[in-house]
Amino acid sequence: MVGTSLRGSGPANAPIDSLLVDSSTQLGSVRIPAPVFTASGCAASGQGLDNFFDIAAIGGIVTKSIMLRARSGRATPRMAETPSGMLNGIGLQGPGIDDFLENDLAWLQARKVRTVVSIAGNTVEEYGRVARRLRELDWLTAVEVNISCPNVESRGQVFACDAAASAAAITEVRRALTSNTPVIAKLTADVTDIVGIARSVIDAGADGVAMINTLLAMSIDLDQMRPVLSGGTGGLSGPAIRPVAVRAIWQVHAEFPNLPILGMGGVRSGADALEMILAGASAVSVGTTIFNDPSAPWRIQRELREELGKRGFGKLTDAIGHAHTVFEASK
Amino acid sequence: MNNNPVQTIGKIIGVRKTGFYSVISIACAGIAETARPGQFVTVAVGGENSSMLLRRAFSIASVDDRSSYGGVIDIVVSAEGPGTRWLASRKRDDSLDLVGPLGKPYPIPKNPVATVLVGGGYGAANLPWLGKVLIQRGCRLDSIYGAATDLKVYGQLEARRIGGSLTITTEDGSLGTMGRVTDVLPDVMSKHNAAVVYACGPMPMLSAVAQIAQDNGAIAQVAVEEAMACGIGVCMTCVLPIIDENGITKMTRSCISGPVFDAAQVRFADINKLPSDVYGADAMGGH
Image (cartoon, rainbow over all chains, first blue to last red; front, side, top):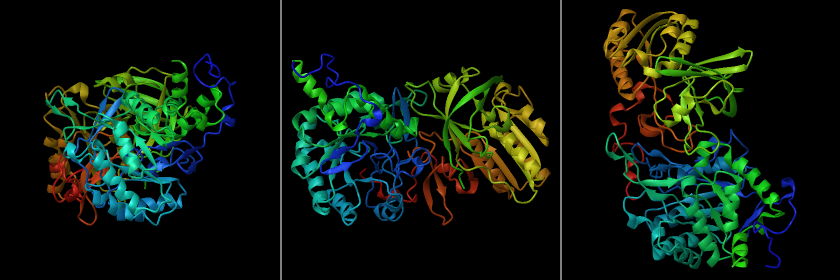
C-alpha cells in the first residue's frame, strides 16, 4: 500500500541514531520524559534498585500495591521458578498506607523520583480510603489502582474480573483524588472480554490502563505432591506471559486508540518493549526481569531507543500502535 | 550496615571439584574488596536468554583482593538442579553476571571469646573465612563440619589451614564421627565454654543448633538459606518470622535483614507458617 514500507516493519524512513530518538511519551495529559517504569511489586519502593541505576532517570517507579493496614503477606513458600517465568503468592505484604507515606513515599519525593503509587483494597470503600490519603500529593505521576491481584482468597474478590466491580472501585478512587492526579486501572488478562473491562473503567473515569497483571497459575511439588506455594495458586509472570500481554494490549488499543496503556508482562529487552508499544502501549513496565537483572529498566530504556532508531522512528509516540496500521494496510 | 552491592560481569579463573561440590573462583571488580564473611552474591544462570530467570544465591566462601586478577571470590556450588548444574559446568574464562556483596555479615565478637563453627553440607562454605577472621580477633576456634556422607562434607582442608580443632560428622559414618553435627556440638561447646556459635546449613540443623546454644547460655548466629527471587530486597519472597527489638514478630526479608540472624530472633517452629501474632497477619483476609 502507498505510504507503507515494503518491510512492513516501520515507517519507510532511514535508521536514526539512537541518541537522537525522542523516547519521551505521554500518559494522557502527563508528559513522561522516559518510557520505562518498574512494575508494581517488583521494585518495592525503589530503594533497593538505586544501587544499580539512577532510578530518577527512568519513566518512574510504580510502588508495590499498598493497602490501608499493615499486612504480613502469606506464609512461605511464596515463589516458584517456572519456564521463562515465576509464580508468586506474596499476598501484598506491606506496611500500610500511613507508614508508606511517612517512609517510602517521603524517600521517593526527596529522591525526586517520578512515582506512580499502586493501591489496593478489599472493598470499594478501602480503595477510596487509601486514595484519599494521596489526595494532597500533587507531585505524584499517577495512582495505579490494582484491581487485579490474583492472590486473593476467592476469585470473586478480583474486581477486574467483573465490569461493575471494576467500575465501582475506579469511581471511588477517581472521586477521592483531585483531577490533577491521573488514575490508571491495572487489569488482568484472566477474563473473557478485557475490552469490556477496559470500557467499564474508562467510563468510571480512569485516565489509562496498566496491563497485564500476573496470570493465575499453579505449580505442584512432585516430592511433596502438593502445590509449591503456601496459598496453592499464585500469579505467573515473566517472558512466559508476554504474548498474552501483547494480545491484551492489542485488543484494548484497537477499541480505544487514544487510551494511554502502560504495557507490562515479561518485558526483558528493548525489543520486547517495542513489541508492546507497536501493539498500542504508550509506555512499558519491567517487572520479573528486575529479579534476573536489577539494572534492566535502565538497559531496556537504552535498547528501546536503539530499536526505535533502527526502524526509523524519530519519536516513540509515532510507534504507539503502529503494528495496527501496518496490519490494516496489509489486509 | 550493608555495603553497597554492585552488578558486574565476572570472569571465571578456575573451577575445581571438591567431593560432591564445585568451587568456582571468579575475578570480579567491586565485590571482593568490600565483602565480609556471611555475605553472598547472586549469579544469573543459563546465559543471556535463559529460561531460568531467578538468580542463584551463594555465600561468598573466600575473597582474595590482592590477586593478579584484581578482586577474586570463591563460591561453592552443589549441582542439584538445572541452574546449579549449568554453573558447575562453566569453564575457565567464562563470564558470570554477579550481584554482590549482599546481605549482612556475621557479627564478630569485640572480645577474644571461644567460638564454634557449625556447617552442614555446603553450608560450611562461608565458615573457614569467618574462622580466619575470628582467629585474627584472638578468638578460640572449634569447627564442626558434617553432612549425610563423606563426599558432601565441605571444608576439611580449609578448616585445617586456618587452625583450631576440627570435628567431622557423617550420618552414614563414612567419615569422622557417625551422626550429626548437633550430636557433638554440646561437648565441643562445654569443653571450652563457648560464647558464640556460628552456623550455616539446612533450617532443621540451624534450629537444633539454636536450641543447644540457648541451653548452654551461648549466642548463636545463624546464616539461613531461604529461597530468594531477587536477593536485593525488592521481591518479598525470602521472608522469615523474625522477632524484632520490640518483641514484635515480622515477616522479615532474609536477603537484606539477614542472611545472618541472632538465632534467638528466629521463630524456627513457625517457618512456612503464618502465626496469628505476626505483625499484619490480622489484615490477611481478602487479598
